[in-house]
Image 1 (cartoon, rainbow, N blue to C red):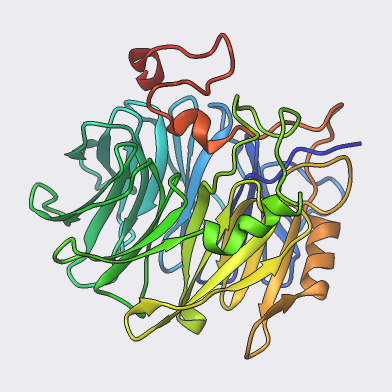
Image 2: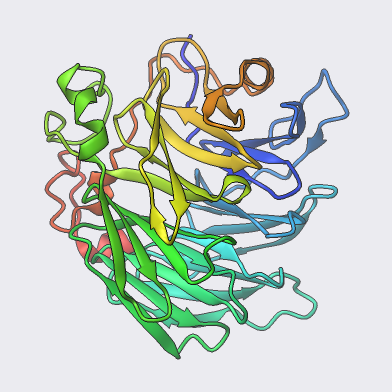
Length: 386
């Protein structure tokens, strides 16, 4: 029978990987063995049981930089922070508004959430010493992504549905360092990098990656995904149609980028695109994104995580087969990591379903005019921000 897809993949600096599906998640070690889960494993008492969130499906997750903490937000305003040493809950609370994204600050003391009302909230992680949650900064549009830069002191990077990157000084985020303006659709992801501390790369529904100077807001480079991925539409390999994505214009050739992440181990950036069964790895050389390696994968992706120099990719659902796959760097290029893929396929399982579930297109929530909402679910701006 079909299984729920893994929709999000988050990897830590300690080698743990969280695979999120619905309201649950598994955590594996770097060898693909499940070490913790929100689902009780009666056959293996060595798997730590994580307190399951009680506030609906998980919307986003993030590890702290030292890997000691893992935070999630849910569609019903739940916030949860876990210690990864024992997977006990450090803090749980309700957010003011539904969150789209979150990040833990470099010190590991503060969780910053990005919500649908356009506000980023400061949330103290350790309740004994925590300040009351309060607004850190605000946009006038839904926030879609958030992260922290690697320079010192750090910037907090926030991206919104109105095509804007905001670079703010942290913790005094009312001091705006710069804006990155140039995208023509909602921004889905932002990637700072240890190897390029002056820069950030953003991904968007407009089908481009854009490289920015964070200090000045200068747009340094624009990369069009269609240049490398049009062949997948031409060959019919791009997965379109109402049976796959819940949107109303599935026949269009478009290149909505789901995620961009830095691969510090090889000084590169990796990106995955909705509908396209491929992973793109862009080397970062002389301050620019170079020509990518384009790696074919079995199914269109839902996310990609970075585990050292390995790439962990989750797939859109199908009737049977692998939920995730791993690519490894052989010193020159990425190739399939069959050993780790096999281990994860055996160990990372999700609940069975009667039918293959649909994946909601990023254009459903990203389109400002709500033209692509499933019929009867268009709603209005106020409903969306509750």
